[in-house]
Amino acid sequence: MGRAAGSPEQGRPAPRTARVAYVDAEGRETQDPAAAVQGEIVEYDGDGRPRGRTRFFLAERQIRWLPISESAFLIWVLAALIGVWLVIGVVLKLT
Image 1 (cartoon, one colour):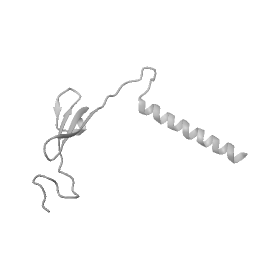
Image 2 (tube, rainbow, N blue to C red):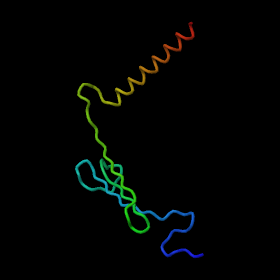
Image 3 (spheres, rainbow, N blue to C red):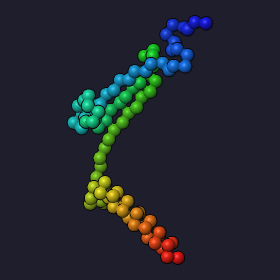
Image 4 (tube, helix red, strand yellow):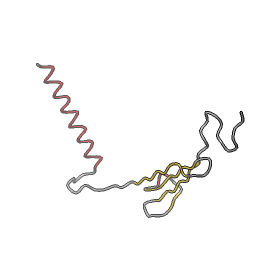
């Protein structure tokens, strides 16, 4: 039995290509993924039809009621949780 022209070999997926568009913080297109704050990736199958589309964006927002940065706040939350864990361990050890 022969293969049909243009069909992928048995057990191998069709080759996929992708078109990538990145946009930097100033709204200009860029080729640097590290500088991108938003973009779109479109994957095409072997016949050139779109098979997948992924959009992404990065936004840093300041939380109004939080006077410090979000990362500093999360470090303090982690420290508080470790402290609670240690206190529970000491209480359980003493009882």
